Amino acid sequence: MLLQLFVCIVPSSLSLSESRLFLISFPDKQGEGSEIRDQRSEMAMGKTLLCVPSVANTAEEMAADMAAAAAMGADVVELRLDCLSSFQPRSDLHRLLTNRPIPALVTYRPKWEGGEYDGDDETRIDALLLAMELGADYVDIEFKVAARLLNLMSGRKPENLKLIISSHNYEMTPSVEELGNLAASIQTLGADIVKITTTANDISDVSRMFQLIVHSQEKQVPIIGLVMKDRGVISRLLCPKFGGYLTFGSLNKGRESAPGQITGSELLNVYRIREIGPDTKVFGIIGKPVGHSKSPNLHNEAFREVGFNAVYVPYLVDDLPSFLNTYSSPDFAGFSCTIPHKEAAVTCCDEVDPIAKAIGAVNTIIRRPSDGKLIGYNTDYVGAISAIEDGIAGYRVKDAAVSPLAGRHFVVIGAGGAGKALAYGANEKGAKVVIANRTYVRAKELASLIGGHALTLADLENYHPEEGMILANTTSIGMHPNVNDTPLSKQALKHYAVVFDAVYTPKVTRLLREAEESGSNVVSGLEMFIRQAMGQFELFTGLTAPESLMRDIVLRMNA
Image 1: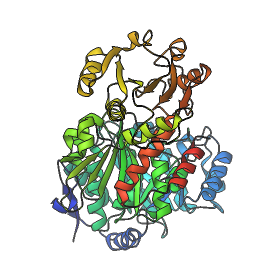
Image 2: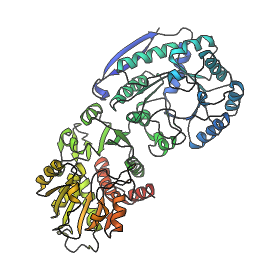
Image 3: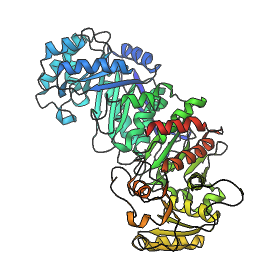
Image 4: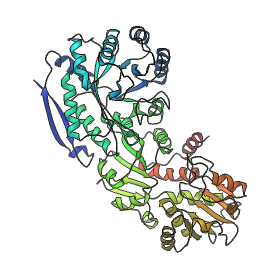
C-alpha cells in the first residue's frame, strides 16, 4: 500500500490556489501503518499546540519550568535533556515525568544536530527509550539515527507515545521538492509527527515551509515546520493558519532553544495564536530592522477590540519586490512599510494614492480584494504634521484654513520616506521647508521637489535664519540601541520653538531631552506613531479606529 504526501511547488509565490502539486509516494511500514495513520488523522484535526522548551541546567529547575509553562497556558513542555549539566537518566526522568503538570516532549539533542550533548548515540538513545518507558507523551529523535531507535523499540511502542522524527538544517531552506522528499522519508520510517526545521537567509524562504505544511495538513500528515533566525519568525507566528502541529515559544527572553524563537507569552498574548485559523487575514510591518516595532502590539490588540479576524506580524525584509511577489495570496491582505522600504514601495504598488505619489513614499499597502492589486497610501504626513501643529505653544484653532506652520522655517532632518512625508505636509501648510541630510545630493533632490532649501547636517549646526523654528528628525539616529546618538547638538537646539523626533524607542530620545532642556516644546514620535497607525487601521479594516484604546495601548507599552 502507498501513502502519498502532496507537496506544493510554487517557486515564486505563496498563492496556494494556483499551486502545482508534486506527488511523493512511498511504501507503508508494515504492521505500523494503520495505527500511525489513525493517530495522525486525530491529531491533524486539532489546533496548533504551544510547546515551551526548558533549557534548564538541573532537573529541579526543569521541574520548575514545567510548572511555569503550565501556568503560562502552554500545551506541551520540551525537556531538553542535553542542557542538563549532570544528567542521571533514571532518577531525573522519574522526577520529571511523574505527576507532571503538562504533557512532556523529551529531546536529547546531540551537538551534530545543534544540541549540547557530546557523548555517544547509544547512551542517548537508551535515555530516550527510558523516557518512553516512564510515560513521556512525545519523544524527538533525529532522522539520521531514527532507524536505530525504532529497531531497539522492536514494535513495543507505548500506546500513548507520539514519536517525532526531526531534521534540522542550520544553513538554509531547501526547495519545496527537497522538503517534500525529506518529509516523505521521515514519514516512511514510522514517525507519528514529522519535524523539519530550516534556516531563513531571506524571508521568502519561509513560504516554502508554509507550502509543505499546507499540503501535509491536507493529507493528514502531522508536521512541525519551522524556519529559524529573525527572517523566519513568521513561521512561528503563522503556523496555526497553515496547519502546523505545534510551535515553540520560550519561557522568557534569553531562554530560547533555537535562533529566532520568541516567548510563549508573546505568542499567546500579542499574536493570539489560539485565535488564528485558516480564515485569519494577515497584516504586518515590513522593515529592516523591524524587531523594535510596537506595531504588532498595537494592531493586534485593536483587531481584538473590534472583533476583526486578523493577525499583525513583523516582516524582516531585504528585497521588497521579491517579498511582495512571494506572499501574493489574498490572505496577506495589507502591509505597513517602514525604514528603508517606503520609497521602494511606490514602485512596487499597482496603484498609488495621489498624495503618496506626490510625497514619493508609501507607508501602507492594501491588497484590493476584488483583483488582488496592491494599492499604496501614506498616513505618515497627516499623523506627524497634526502632532507638530498641536505641539506649538499657545496655538488655538482660530482659522481652520491657516496652519500655525504657515510662514515658519520647518527643518526636516532626513530625506527618506518619512522625511518626504514631513516635507510634503509642511509645504502644504505653507511652511518654509529646509531639508538637512548627511548626503547633500539627496537633500537637494527632495528640496527641489517641494521648492525648499537644502543643507548638509554639518551646515545645520550653524543655521538659524530666525528664532522659533521647527525641527523634525525623520532619521533613525538615536533609536535603540544607539540611544546616545543625536542628529543635532544641544547648542543648536536653542533656536527651535518645537522639536519633533520620529524615533519612539526610546520614548524620550537624547534629541528630545536636550531640546526640552533648551526651552523647546517637544513632540514625541509616539504621537506620529499613534496617528499614522489609526489611519492604517482604518485602511486595513474599513472600520473606525478605536482611538482611546490605541492611545492607552501605546502609553502602556511605553510606561
